[in-house]
Image (tube, rainbow, N blue to C red; front, side, top):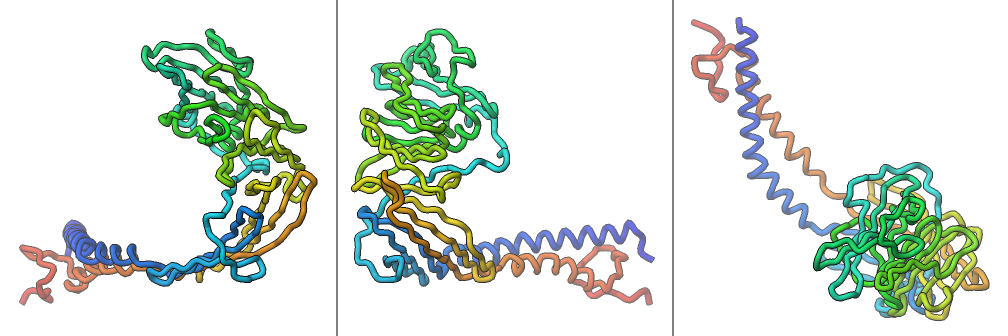
Length: 379
């Protein structure tokens, strides 16, 4: 009669055999199979909304069959367009919806710092420091790059040699820090950089959204200026590229501001009720005004890997909405082969085979051999 110790020994030996088989199987079978499937081109069809620089809304149809990719343009009604893709506008995402829940926030230093440099020689490195609190504060602190000596601080009131108390710092909430970021670079070529990488250094002035106000920080002059204000606090800031120009875009609850040059007044558009309190994408056009659109998940077919989104498009100008359009777009992809289970099944099967080979006679011979023919007992 086999003992528990003998049974456990045979099970352990069977497990060792299965583990060895698994290692050999992965190297010999699964890796080549994974390499083949990972380099396989999926058949897919994808529709996306684009807008040309003359304000024409179009649908870009991208279809892949193996290694062949075809791209065509049609109007919203399906008519073919023969236009260059170089005339496609760039859209910026603007956050207008109030967050429904408090998202987790990392208090690591790397997520609470932003480093910028001025144009002086030798340059001075300025770090925007955020305290990470829900209704927190931020300030700029500058250091001489050649001596590492601290120069001073910049807050809403401008430059100070002394350290700034919280009431003299920029009032920055977590949502402003997380969602809105910083816009950098001299006009009219303004650049955007979100405050998530404390190692990157950019040269030029910077724009900051703090406490619902829009600040332009001149690091050379060491000043903080509010160039204009809105009827309600600003909720989001971004930049957009259109017609070879870069512009700052600001969003309040009821207005949209497009700033091409901070020495000039911004273009102001009153938002329609359909866009107030919502997230949307925006791009200005050369003739003034611009195009905004919202997208909403409509339907999904998981088996066919098909997703459907409903788009609502608005042509906006200073006088209001000139026209609107609605379109539903779909994206499909061929299902990927599920080869994982096919690879893993033989591994436990090796252990089962070893046990069945012994007909569950767990009593070990003097030298246990999983491939030997088991004996039925002593003669």
